[in-house]
Length: 365
Image (tube, rainbow, N blue to C red; front, side, top):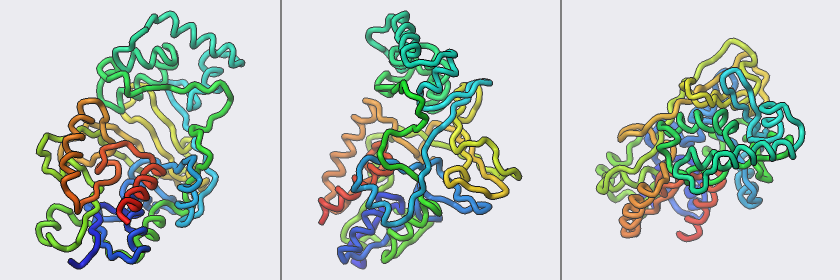
């Protein structure tokens, strides 16, 4: 036993656990199958711009403890997430707010917006929504649904809204103020200099191996650590013995453009079903960049198959039931801690990943 902990995955959960374990005098080996640390929050410097290689990551939280925790490792700027939606040749502010409604219906007051939405909902006579389409229509009416929800959601999930379960959209908040701030959280920003530096600081004092597959590594080093922290796919850990869980994957097309400013905003969603990508990210705007060139990434959502990169779990009733079977197996592995989005089969924002990792640390120590 050379190490106290073998930590599988150099993303946020694994890095927080490693940092806290080293603080307590434990010896950790961190491995990752990718050729870099940082997991999905990895940022790569291209043309002096910190590019979010695996999609936009905007840190936001209402938990002051978590905000203070992450600020140990980087200084955050005052970026506010204010995405824009493009539907055909129309442009709207997100989240749904008075700027959205004013543009859509040529109105000015919250009273007018509420009356239009309420009237559209009442005209549909949907009492018990049977699918996502009916659920969304019963929350925001036809105009907002058709232009800003339907196409985007169908691209995200790869199937018609009429075939998706209603519970995926529990609520679609409408704001009756002229406020384009996407998040309600008290604290929000982007680390100045990108996210990779945060993980580097967290892993200081650990041994780190990248381009290392856990399953091959385990065969050659079965006794390298007393315990394992596993942040990969829980179903893969158990060799898909109950069958694979479902995930969605994302493909990114990133290019450098010889212009200073391509779209004027960090995040632009394309809500028309006929546009193949879900959104375009212009990375320099996360840090108010003034570089002479710009870098953009188009995001394409896709069905996941074994061997592909999983991005987020499909938490419907069927998959959650299957996950419970794997969770029961996990509980019989006293020397393995399963954590993170894939290890716990749960969609986590970054602040929730940190909170879950710190809870894991508290249980362990």
